[in-house]
Length: 285
Image (cartoon, rainbow, N blue to C red; front, top):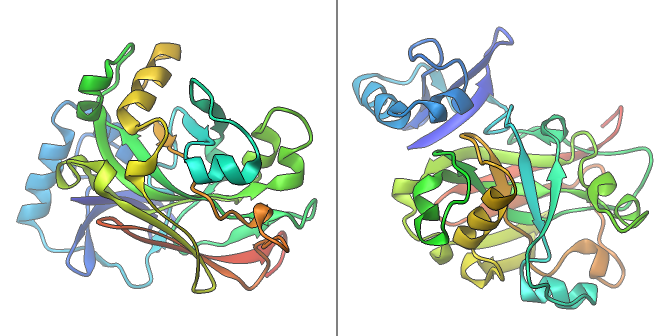
C-alpha cells in the first residue's frame, strides 16, 4: 500500500491510501485518528488494506493538498555522512558509529508544498534521502530483526541552511529551519520493499540530476541504524529515520549550487515515487 497524510478541502487533517488515481480515506473509519496512530495498532495495516480493498476512492490525487507523511512523529532522527562520496566531498572521515542529529516535526512540509528559503541565509541546500518509518516499536532491537520493525519507506529532502549548520560543531541549527524538510509524497509499506538496498535514490534541481546513488551504498545500513538508535532510546511507531544523503550537495560544488525562489526540487526513490517541491522566499514567492 501507499499511505499518505493530507488536508481536506475543509482544512481538516486526514490520512488514507492511494488507490488508482485517488485516495481511500481511512481517518474516521478506523480506530486511529492519524497515520501515526494507525501504525501503532497491532493490526493497523491489515485493517487498512481490507478497507481499501472494499472501497472506491473518496478524493482524487489531482489537486490534493499533501501533508508530511507522518506530520506528528515522536522523533525524527537524521543521519549525517552516511555515503562515502558525501564524506569525501566534505573532507571528513568515516566514523565508527553513525552521526545522528534531530529535526523537528514543525520544520516539515508535504509533497507539492513550498520549500522556504529563510531571510537569514541564501545558503539553502538540497539533500536527497530515503526516509524509514517505524511500525513496530522497541528498544535494543538487534540488527538481524530490525527490518521487521519498519512500516515503510518514503522520500525526504533534508533541506539544510549551510552557514547556520557551520556556526558550531552541532548541526541542528542549520537542519530544522521552518519549511525546509520535505517528506512524501507517501509511504510505501515494507511488504512491497523487502530489500531497501536495491532502491535507487536520485535528487534533481530544475530537472538537472544533482545526486544519484544506490541505497546499498549506505555506510551504516538501515538495520544497523535501527539497532544503534534503539540502543539510545526506544523507537516508537511513526518515528522517522532519515538515512543520509549521497555526494553532490550544492555546498560542495564550484560554484555552490543553492536552491533559490522559483526552483523546483525533486527527490525520486525507485519503487516509491517522486517528491516534488517548489522553492519560495520566506514570506513571499
